[in-house]
Picture 1: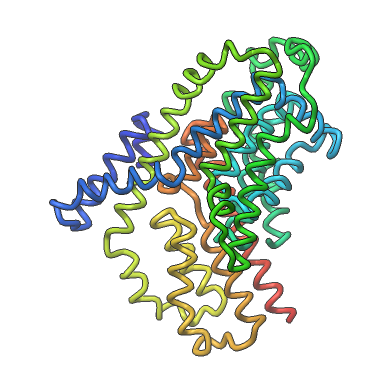
Picture 2: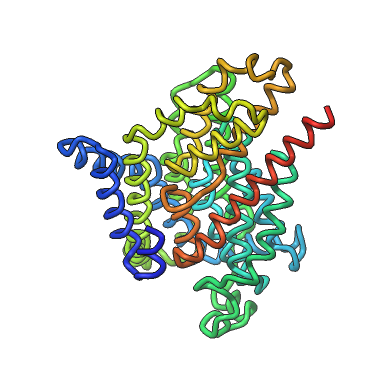
Length: 409
């Protein structure tokens, strides 16, 4: 798959779908079921993230069109300084992904990332990687999504490093991007909207999802809270706020064309992301997970490296961090005493080790890989250099963090 995409220049959608079909045949999935498995993987991805991507992209387009994204960028720059947009992105991602899944969080925060790149003239790739790593660390380590400071530091340093090596299509150094100065860009919008209304289409959905998560953790699930806290509904509320913002700017006459253009842009992202879901589903349908479970005893002598490696194998094989976390926990829970994990601290370290493994690594069978790569305007081969390598680095940093704590306490 990687060779087909990077070397042979075959479109990622066709590459992933072809490899998924071949794998299903070679792995021995019943021929009569292969079409159903592929369909389930494709539709399952649309169910979980498809509408979120569409609504998030529309919110982002509205924020860009009204100048709200630039207003948000100004506020962030005043807070962290013009020289450190990467720090702003990784911290925002880390906070937002506590109540929100990383896929949704990246779509929601991407307008701020793009505006910050315009505002600061810093590397687009560095800001993309910083945002992705911040979101991913919380996603894998902090409930209610299924962090240690060391992975955050590692992710930030890697973002600064890789931003100098890899370039995206929307880099501010491109001739097209520097066609007008930031001041001229702001002037082209006339008067920018206020800070409260600019942030509302992004902040309100995050609050709604966060409140729903809090109620769920408390064991209470009022129907209205559950309804408003679903990512699709929360982002729909954000979209309504974005439309209000557009009406206030006097640009409602452009709304139909804006929607049409956004859907055309999002289409390829949706299909490639769904293809990644197909590959993950095919792998999950094979006997691979059961094989790993049956042979887990060979890893038991590794101590805390055992839950890490087990989760990493499952994550890399089938793409879902949630599946890697839950499957690893199910395997290890009955073995806790046998493995010598007898204290509450041991249990906590095992949990973090599983989380570290479950982020190692994100590649083409992970829908988040395609969300980051496409919204970050990078080529697939650049996604391997940034997202895949970045998740490897923060995963290793995380397990080092676990081993250090274990050695001290």
